Structure formats: C-alpha cells, structure tokens
Picture: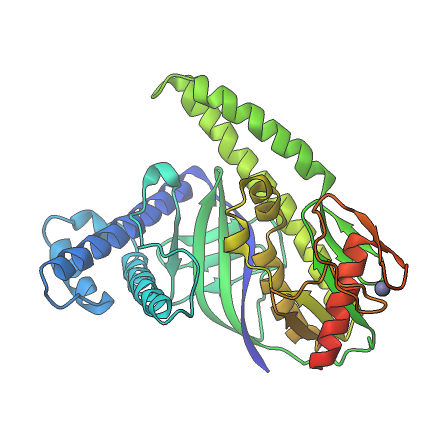
Length: 376
Ligand SMILES: [Zn+2]
C-alpha cells in the first residue's frame, strides 16, 4: 500500500542560511498575500477570479521590474504559496456550499492575510531534494545540517516536497514523501472503548487511564503568569518584545508536550487492540462552553481522532466512531438502563436498575465499546 507521510526534524542553520530561510519565508508570505488580495479584488469587481497559474504569471512579470528582489529566492517559494491560496480559497467556498446544504455546522473562516507579527511562517520547495544521513540539500538553500541524524529516509521513498518552517526561533524541515507501507497484520485481538476526557486525556473500557501530561498543568500556570506580565508591558517597548519571545517559546513547548502525550496514547491503543471504539465529539459545539474550552482544546480531540485514524490503518486496527448524541455517560454498561440526567461533577454513580457502582469514565468507555459492537 502506498502512503504519503511527512518526516519533520530540526535544522541546524548558520547565520547565513538563516537569512536565506527568512528571505524565502518572507517571499512566500508576500506571494500569499498578493494572491489573496488579487482574488478578493477580482471577486468584488465581478471578474473571473485568477488561479494560482494566472497569479504566478502575473508575479513573474512584476519580478522583471518592481519585484526584482524575488530573484534571490527559489521560484518554488512564491509558486507553492500561490497554490496554498488557491486551496484555502476553494476550501472556503466548498464549506459555504456544505453549510447551505446543512452538512457542515462549524464556523466559516475566510482565508486571512499572513502577518509577520503572527510568525515568520514557512515555505515549500519542490525539485531536486537530496537527503544525507546528517544533512538535507534543498534548491537554492544548499546543504543544511540536521540536528537529528538518520531520521529522514534516504532510500526507498519518493520525495514530493520539503517545507521549511520557523517556530520560536528554531527552524524545521518537513519532508513529504510517498512510501510503500507493508500492511502489518495485527496480532492483537482485543476490542477497546475509549472515553475522551477533560480532566484525564482518555479512559479505556479496561480501566486504564491516560492522564494529561503533568508538566502541561505547570506550563499552563506559567503561561497565565507570563501573559499577565506581557499585557502590562508598554506597547512597542523592548521589554514587550522580550516577553513576546518568551511567550512564543512557551507556547511551542506546551504544544510539543501535548503532541507527545497524544502520540503515546494513540500508538498504544492502535498497537494493542484490533477494534477501537470512540465517540464522535462535536468539538466546535463544546468549545462554546468557556469553562470547558481550555481543557478540551488541550485534550485536542480532533487531533486524537486524526492520529487514531492513520495509525489504525498502519496497524490494521478497526476504528469505529459512535454517534455524538449517544448517551454514553448516562447508560449503564451492564444492563443498558439510561439515566435521565447525570451531573458533570458526578464521578461515580450507581445504576438504579442493576445496582452496579460505576466509575463515570470507565462506564462511558464500556458503553461506547458495546455500542460499537452492535454496529460491527
Ligand atoms: Zn444497570
């Protein structure tokens, strides 16, 4: 089976290379904003909205005169950025259509302009890309050293593109490849139900709990403190810039520790079970409840599902998603009795019908598993 996947790793760039990377990211940002504003203008004027190819041609003409600085960077950077505009623009109108048909209930967001203040961003390169054990060779940028050796695949893959991005002062490359994946026959035979949680990351029907990483809580506390301090600094002051840098670094650390916990959890589940049942949580709807919002976005339900789906394919696991209106917490997993209400604070409850004492989350996970077996 052929799959497309990414390999992301940190670059070890020197000052000269950093400058070239910044130029490329800047050009990509410029091209993206150029494309978006041209599309908006054409749309408003009732003209045909230009495609990425039209825009690239237009940009190439301008390159000969006022945008001559663009010759310093690979032509891929603006070209790929224009493709991204195309995608973002089409994606928006596809969502609008779905919303009209009632098939999409989330928020609609028109593509926004990229601001340097929001981050340096990234750029994508195609063409001749070579991977060595300790370096990667990219068009126009030359050989860049890698912090981790032997991680990027050097053989047996077809390289599609490389994306270079900046995050909190560090530079990364993500290699997009197409590779042959041998379907792993699972030796696991067990079935498991998962209740995705707020206080705990997830609870399984066999009683195993996956807590949120402990370090996350501490980091969130620190974040609150930093944000308060940041808001007190004078605008455009040196101190504000300093605290902004600190904040970006902390944000990146929080995201990393969260991602790490999610990966450990999803790999464990898919590797050890042949059948996995989860609930289809309406994340956008739940985020309206502000008390839960922080905690839920922390648990990143959407990301958990995404990871489960692709890892399930890798391990040959079957993932069943249960309807989001299924009353998993309120249903007794032993006799099927359904409670009228169950307060969010009630961690333990007793079934009035069969008198079983239930741990709220474990029971929910068991009910989810039972419901998925019916669909099986
Ligand atoms: Zn019962």
